[in-house]
Amino acid sequence: MKFKLALAQINTKLGNLEANTRRHEEVIAQAAGEGASLVVFPELSLSGYLLKDLTMDSALDPACAAPLKHLAANRSQTACAVGFVEQSRDFKYYNSLAYLDGGSIQFVHRKIYLPTYGMFDEKRFFAAGDTLRPVDTRFGRLGFLICEDIWHFSTAYLLAHQGALMIVASIAGPGRGVRGANDILGSAASWELLARTVAQFNTVFFVTVNRVGFEDGLNFFGASLVVDPYGNILARGKTFDEDLVIAEIDFDLVRRARAQVPLLRDEKIELTLRELERISREKFLLE
Amino acid sequence: MDITSDLVGVLPPLNSGLATQITTRFISEELHKAGFEKVVVGLSGGIDSSVVASLAVRALGPAHVTGILMPYRMSSPDSLSDAHGLADKLGIPREVFDVSPIADGFLSRKEKMGNTRQGNVLARARMIVLYDFSAELPALVLGTSNKTEILLGYGTLFGDLASALNPVGDLYKTEIRQLAKFLDIPEKIIAKPPTADLWAGQSDEGELGFSDAEVDRLLYHRVDLGFSPDRLVEMGFDKKFVVRVLELIRRNQFKRCGPLICKLSPRTVTHDFLYPRDWGM
Image (cartoon, rainbow over all chains, first blue to last red; front, side, top):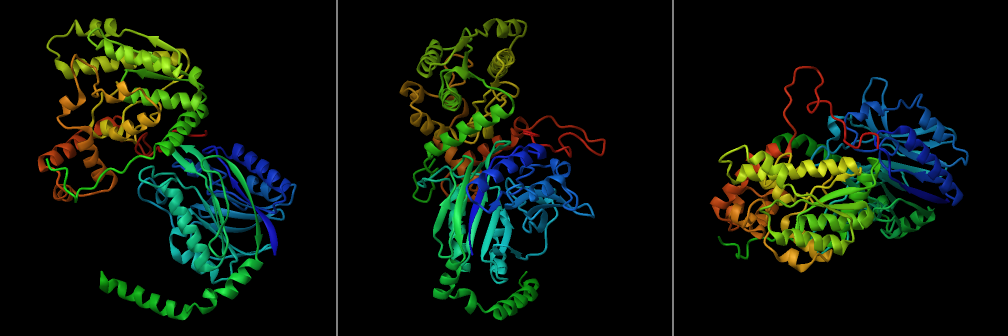
């Protein structure tokens, strides 16, 4: 399977769903014009990130949300993954990513790891997701994660072992780290190291799509990445500026990488599970 | 104080190019999305306001940055001429507004105010002038307080601490100096001892009793890296210095917060009415 993937490295208006939906439409049309058949957007791309009490005001019920349906039925029949605040039927709010294709919402990933430290305060406003499943799409089996999810190594591992050929992490990564000898932003360097490691250790395509712009003084630095299953960077978005990154994804590369380095085949899942169960049991003794 | 020990960490050099990219984008984006095209900066002839004005010119172009020079009759004439020199160099429009009548109109009716209170009156007089120019143009007021001053509380509440956007509030004073060199601020401005110029012969270092370099190293290890006070003393910082600086940080927390609101209802502004400032933008 070969297809053109587009990373929509956009800025958003905080809590302004209408303006952001229009922006999504424009970018999807532009990406389709460049031959992309899948467009992935950053974390909370329909609402903006630093919502605080706007979380409730920006929430969408996937069952009836007009913006999601509207984007799913886009004219160019392009598949897309968009970030939004999901309101569940029992009135919880999730930091979610919807995979849209063929006029409908095919899959929703709810962010599992909600950072609540330093500048982050997500648990104050969001409920955490508690499942981790890939989704079968017309491109093959894909895994979707949101930002902090990927800083926990188990998430990519679990998706890769369920057959995901490409893992997409939608992120809203604030830039920081302007000291020292490094020529690039500290947080951009961390993300790059992480992305290459995740791709290589799981022999998958790994994609980060980060947004740009400022919210209350926080800057989102862009520099979205497409990494191949060997850990090579295939494409990189501009730093700080909006960008539409187009990359050709060829899943035959996953086959070849896994033939050369069959890490997933050789993985001892039962051993991992046994040890995890023991660790989970003994954790109480250690404390 | 032993600051030469090998065990003592240093504040790593600033990547001035990156800091300039981020702060100029900050000025431009936060300004424009609030619906403004222009900024005003109070130009004192010192390094902080020179750096902020220079960043603003890079972000917006000289026509959108107005330098406001606000001398007091006791201010050093050098400060005024340095501010003019900088405005010339940057090619920005400027306004000179002597704050002596405002300040003296108040000061002449009070006795035995002491330097601190007089300094506060001057800082607030300048705030009145800056905010009125910002309403007239219209423009937003750029703040010039650096991280060292904000942490130590070396600023006047509703005076020089008042601003709409502060591009340099996360840079220590020694980092401002590095950025100033990168931005090609005149050496004369970089080299002169920092002063709030609130009274003749005032210098920040004289008032605080320690140098920027010393206190910035301490603040960096405490605030940025999270070292414990004991660890700071082990590193070679004088214990009295550590205690004094940490106490200054604590005691001045009020200057970094809005007024406390007494909670009575289920939803109270500042407590649980938590909207971002960039709401809808």
